[in-house]
Length: 616
Image (cartoon, rainbow, N blue to C red; front, side):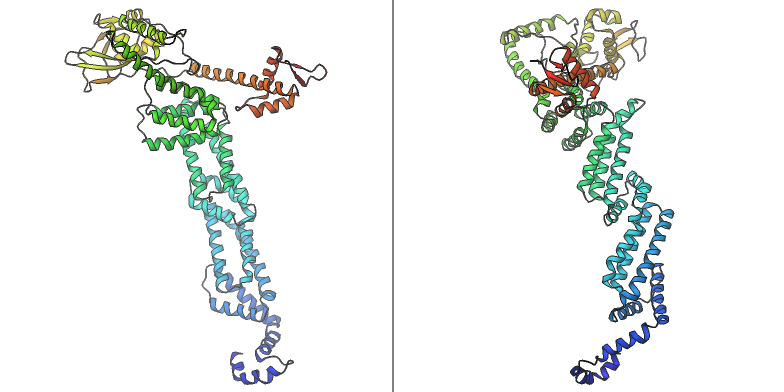
């Protein structure tokens, strides 16, 4: 055709150009080729089947003459027969092939291998479009691959492989899955649903503890933090930081962490205590700050924030009073985070505790100036605590040495001279001392609790005392005394020895001052044997939270009734839920309503028992 047109080019440009009824040699040639060659059904079938067979061979991995296919398809385009005789049949063949392949490969392959195969197919089809298929075929072809290999199998893919990919943290595979499902209708919506489901299932495994295994509970917060880091990394690395996935993650964490009431809040408070306590050398200050930020994310998820506050306050008090806080800056930073998250009302008592410590420090400076005119045998430091801010402590009386009693009386008189009308209640169980001890070879300073000091000071009067004698002289409660003597006679720094030898303390034991005690340090800290927090103590703390909640519910009901004057039961319950910030059962709300009715704060409507009136 090209050669013939070249030979008769002059004819084409002169005679043919002047006549509207005569086709150009090129157009006439195409028309004749279409009429006598491609309109021949036998030739057309063999040509199209040949092209489709070559494409199928390439799809199966064989090498073909791409130039030949390209020229044939370009010829069909020039003849305006590409869509009519090729594309329709090509798309039918492609749909049948990928329908069968999708079903077969999904059964044979694991999900990561399957999505890798799908990605490979998409790249191959895009290459064919680039080399020899018409650009107009592109959308139809790619849609076909996406529909037959992805869209028709989205739920099956997610059910079969998503959990395993997340468990094994297969980031590259998860990223590819996200990219592929983003191409099909509802793909990301389904992925988000199954992603949230995985977080809920996995999170419940960490939170729920049917056997109340203390060891499992001990690891809960760290496991949740690690799991949160993992899901954050997946969202950033694989899920394009998609806002819908971030929201689903937050809702799922909130769901699973509140499947177990109160305990997660308690354990988060204890976890923070472990990190802020002196002796924790796991992290630098910057790392500790980052860790606290992560913990605050978990804190946001818990509903029982008042439970957290109760346990956090109890642990903070121990850190401040016993001097076990690792860093005052870290404590203040954590308090600032809690205030920013929950408001000033939530942290008012906690801030009051720090304020008491500051006031105590300033007051002691004044007291020590006062002591310059009064000779005393020992140094003293007193923390003056406001009762409403601090956890409640049971008053304990012990027998103090005369020197301590005398100094305590001086402090009391000085304090009351500044603040007349106030009452001081002493808490010796929270005290600690530095005792100077003389052994055979050297003098040491022992950093001990007040109870330990009382026991040690007895040995100024003699070298041997029985358990009952020590108990009689000190008036320390028996269980506390056993732990105290155990720390002095059975620990690493044994400044006492006991008869008979052993790790446990009995009321028949005798104790001797260990004159041969040696240690490389001059000041030695002797740790008190801590009684593990009992179920009764935890129950007492939880009970205090429950009582506080009752007062808050009562106050909310009275506020609502005072404003509304008259209200139905369902509307009252709804408004109570809007006002309180902790989870509560409707049955508990009903009990508080009944209690307020009994106390004449409100009354039922005489004609409609489902309606209440405020009693002024």
